[in-house]
Length: 250
Ligand code: BJW
Image 1 (spheres, rainbow, N blue to C red):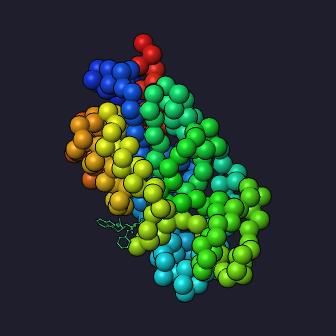
Image 2: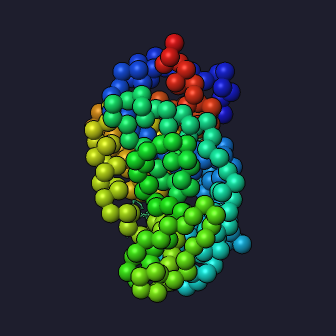
């Protein structure tokens, strides 16, 4: 990884950043890493819970087979999250929303840290850890910061599961469509802290690029999207984003 002092923000990116009206940002787990939230992948590692890889415990099959175990994993992560704060990347993105005429923040993260930093109208493609939904009637149940949650649905009494999107499950109605429309219409697209392995989220920068947007990735590691990007800034989001703002302020 380049050191921050070696990182060059091109004059093209600076000009695009200064002049863009329509900006789309796609974030992934790496944006919350500096807050202390573990990523799923990266550095050759895979997140594991009690010996189970995350894609086993965070799967639709596990919800069917052992819902209490799934809740245990999500309760543990909510407890951790309740002690964590937004980092410099979340705070910078919250500032960007008033900088551009049309700013859309799309996240794969379920942690709610963008909203805690002050971002509004965030499109949460993979749901929220702060919600549950009924396995039968799909009623939604908010989970408070203190962690209190219902095991049984208030409406029909059937089991409640985490309101997140697991592999093979559909994204929340309309969320990808809204994100894809923003991608097709943006002039500048940032891809931040995602391994870009999970679809359909990883298709958004492809849509933006195809529609003529300038695409910039910020990540300490290269990803399958790096070659598609006009600019790749190798570094941590919490360090690089403030630098982009600073360069554009000069
Ligand atoms: C830093 C950093 C720092 C570190 N600063 N960066 C097309 C092709 C192939 C497959 C499919 C396809 N379309 C659909 C699929 C199937 C599947 C899929 O994509 N599979 C692939 C993995 C092969 N997709 C789905 O199933 C999706 N549903 C769907 O498509 O429905 C339609 C459908 C239904 C039925 C049949 C067919 C179609 C749903 C995907 C749901 C993903 N869910 C999870 C779990 C959520 C719950 C939980 O949290 O437990 O979402 S999986 C996990 O991965 C989580 C994340 O949101 C997601 C993405 O991970 P992300 O954010 O990229 O994190 P990491 O850890 O992978 O990467 C971190 C990055 O940060 C790294 O690059 C680091 O270097 C970097 N980093 N520090 C900046 N400081």
